[in-house]
Image 1 (tube, rainbow, N blue to C red):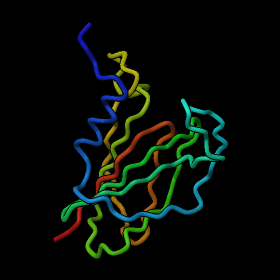
Image 2: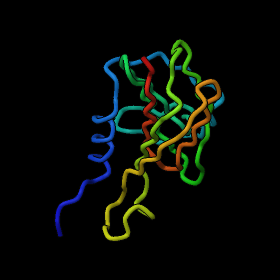
Image 3: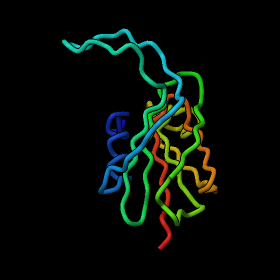
Image 4: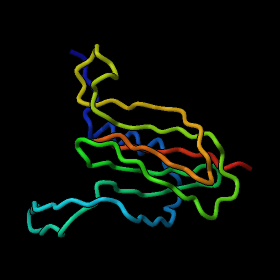
Length: 143
């Protein structure tokens, strides 16, 4: 059997190919949380963590919204506001590393990267991140 990418390498590749050269200020509100009791080595857990982690990077030409949806059974939709960016394209690409089911039945990979072209409303952008996924939303900035 030929080698295939493991999920950790797939996530690293997804981020390596889709990020800006600046980390942009981001703020999240109202994201559901869950209790996380597990301790790792000497690191004690916090009381709870959000189901959705968001980090935003950008360049002069693109904005990248990096998201991890930790929910095991639900997609999570959220409203994104890209304040300070006057000329956002109405076209975006959502790339999500998801379970392999439905991606390619001919391989036994644990995960795959699904890419979806979206039409967005920059004034009222609602994006749905798949359950158990690592995603990047790539949005162009008009010149």
